[in-house]
Amino acid sequence: MKKNIKNSIKMKVFLLSKGLLIFLLIGLSCKNKKNEPTNDNAEEGFPSVLVKFSPFHTNPVFEGTNEGTWDKNFRERGYILYEKGLYKMWYTGYNDSISELRYLGYATSQDGINWKRFSKQPLLPETWVEDMHVVNYNDMYYMLAEGKGDVAHLLTSPDGVSWSPQGNITILKVDGEPISEGPYGTPTVWIENDKKYLFYERDDLGIWLATSEDFKTWTNVQDEPVLEMGPEKYDAGAVATNQIIKYKGKYYMYYHGSENPDWMDPGVVALWTSNVAMSSDLVNWKKYPNNPIVEGDHSSPVLVFDGKEYKLYTMHDKIWRYDAAK
Image (cartoon, rainbow, N blue to C red; front, top):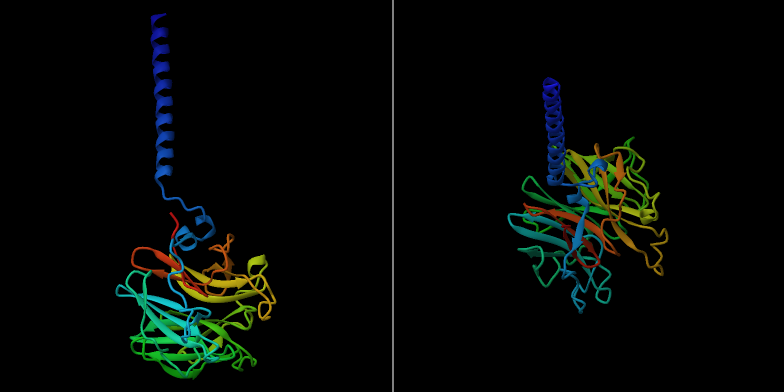
């Protein structure tokens, strides 16, 4: 009898200890999960640091003068690089009461919030520069921008201020024949292992990809768009690339879109959105399921890494800044 009681006590102690151990393990597991950084989009391939932003409290941080200057208004995509602690912005200014030209402007900032115009005059007073993209490659700045008629052209500069026009770029189809006449704009460059990739649009009806060895002559990777409009409403009427970045082995395209197919009609007010797509090979793209990434009519997004975190800027038609969402 005593032996059975003793065995019964041992069994109860064992079961109690086992239950306590399971309880502790469950609690430890929950604690570890609680302390893990959460990323509700990780399973979809879109890290929160690339798609979750909050507008800066004093937006816009930069805009046209709204006076009788050449940059009374801003137009289309500008571009920002962060180099050696300095934010550098190239932008398009215009004033139709002065000229039909779209002028190249330049401004800098120490904090990405307070900007100083480089000059009261445009950098290239005789050249149409719109919707530009800038890269610093082998100690030379290369700018691809739209000219009149949305035809892309190349400019080069040793310092990002003094620019030399190099003429229109040439785009060839896969078979080596020139693409059909018409606009080819919103040029966006990605460089990897010295290979140059160009993303461009035609009437914003799709995004094409071409490659080059010299920035001047480009050959399509395929003659069909790598990113098409829709099927969601926010970009069913127009799409155009603004920037490509690489993050943890994946490529991310920041692009703008519109739901209105009649956006080119002067009498139509079209909403333009900022969006993201992801790819493993620069050809096949998956759109972020929660596009657009910012609210309202704020487009031409450009992501800037300041050494600590990403800042997002929308560039049309005023410059808005967005910080990482907390």
